[in-house]
Image (cartoon, rainbow, N blue to C red):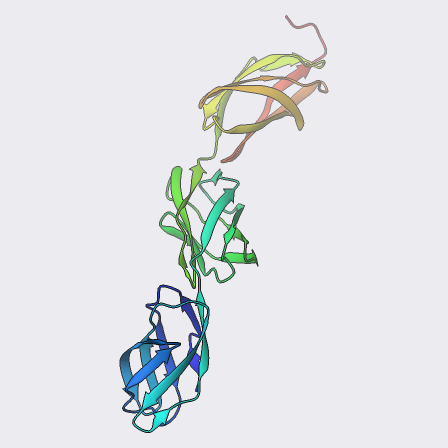
Amino acid sequence: MPISPNQGSTSGGTAVTITGVNLSGATAVHFGSQTATITANTPTMITVIDPAGCGVVDVNVTTAGGTSNSLSFFYISPPIAVSLGPGSGPTAGGNTVTINGYGLATATTVSFGSNTATATVVSDSQLSVVVPAGSSSGSVDVTVTTTGGTTAPLTYAYVDAPTLVSLTPTSGSTSGGTSVTVNGTGLASTTAVTFGGTAASFAVLNSTTLVAITPPGTAGPVNVVVTTKGGSATLSGSFTYGSGPFI
């Protein structure tokens, strides 16, 4: 007498199908000491809505001919999501985040606002998820759905990719130390600035402006790359290192 599914939320409400023989005219289906609601019944199948419960319970069917053998049904506690990291990423998605909590082993989907992703279960307390693309920049609720229910939401922020418009000045000494103003958009979450692949120190003034101090470099033009939580942007050959005097 198979039962499908054989697990559900402790709050009940799961549609469960039981198959077997001589099942017509069922008068009761018990989940432990509780009685389920019968929604359909044929000689070989019964569909019920399970009652609330906890732990592992025996399920059996009672008809005019007697009571069947028992099968096991597993009640799954509601999941709890505690933290999510990193808490932001590009609007285009594709980055991986980790969700920590409890009761996550039966996770089926993770929702980022109106978009969903499939979770990779690391353990009962951790999930790895590739973030789906967002509809726009901004914060969305993140929830995890498991056999036991859905978590309370955590918050994730989608960040638009940056753009670079200009540098001032566009040249400086190979010894470094030149203060360069970088103009663009989406710069507020900047995490790195490089000149020719070498990291520069920087300070973000606002979402459209940052100031970077050039590192030492080799004479000639180099690319300037700004990396933010929303992605990276490059101004190719936009800064030129020179060996002559600069003031």
